[in-house]
Length: 255
Image (cartoon, rainbow, N blue to C red; front, side):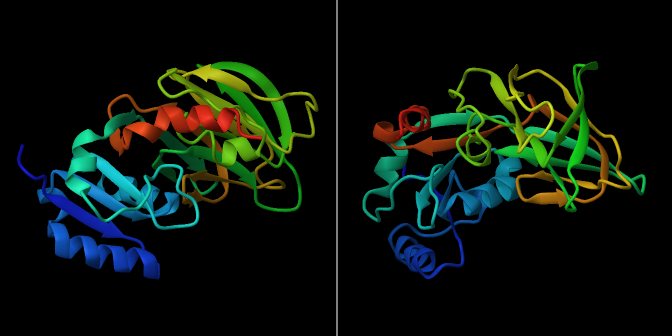
């Protein structure tokens, strides 16, 4: 088997830059569009940046943790990187598509590999209506915010907001409120991945709301449509002993 051509990408941290230089000397460096595999060196934030920037190329991504959070990354080692890549197990992720309408009349689209979240912009709670596949399910959620999370993103912000951790490959996504005030006992929902979720901001002038797809924020939204993209996907590569499915399972038993 031929040695794969690697595109080495690194965050700006000192450790990641040192690793970039080391791996570049060992394996050479190719542009992402010319590579067989993209290697991302950093934390989960940098991994998400890499997916947003180069996901359309369709190249598998092997991440190594050189940042503060590394749920989507493998352990860093500079030895036998081609062998690790050859033995790696793939995890295919479908991002969420966000389509946001703003008070100014603009329509803004974006992708999210972790979650799409709506958040109040001021001290006043947001008032949001929720429709699923065109049917009104919650006429008014009074809250700090609400989100839709993918299985890969369910262990991140979603879990911090007391949302469920979702098994990879279960074809579901999490709908999770953030600090809900009314209905007080509503804990959210687990939805089929094909569900179309529409959020309507009920009082956008008095209670403005922003929408964020991963790190792309849109201010002063009036309506936000979220659905899973079936046309787009990215493939992450993981060491077999700690693949993404195993990581998600471990998180469910963490104490």
